[in-house]
Image (cartoon, rainbow, N blue to C red; front, side):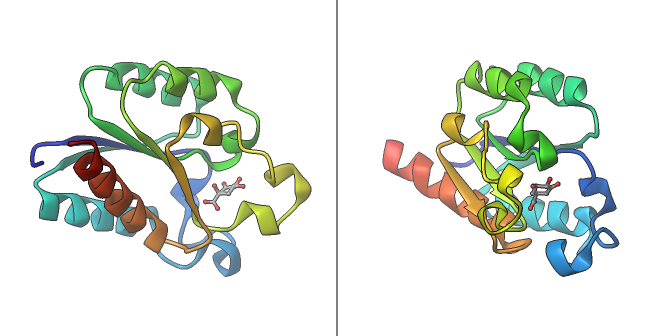
Length: 149
Ligand code: DQA
């Protein structure tokens, strides 16, 4: 269905993509990933609002503001993935589907990355496919909405 409004959130340090540990996170910039999401969404007739923040409070406020004003959230919470119960709780209060995205595969990295407090409130997680994961999240939402019809 056309007209869906997607909130794309990227957490701490993702503003450094392109130069941040490119062997782990790739060489594409965040702006390039956002452009890809916007293009994928435009193809479906969907709009995208994007926020990158290094602040947990700002991300929580953006999730609150998304209630009733957007149809789905795509979020790469960065390191907040692993311990931000505030983001978990904000997402739990959100009424639409949530897709968690990671460029890397946290499960194949340090043990502290193996826990996600966001995963329990997401319909699914895309991890380990680099920037392709953002596009896969859009595809997953498209299929989710089609199946829910
Ligand atoms: C990340 C994985 C997290 O563990 C890390 O803290 C990040 C990026 C990813 O996209 O692979 O900042 O979310």
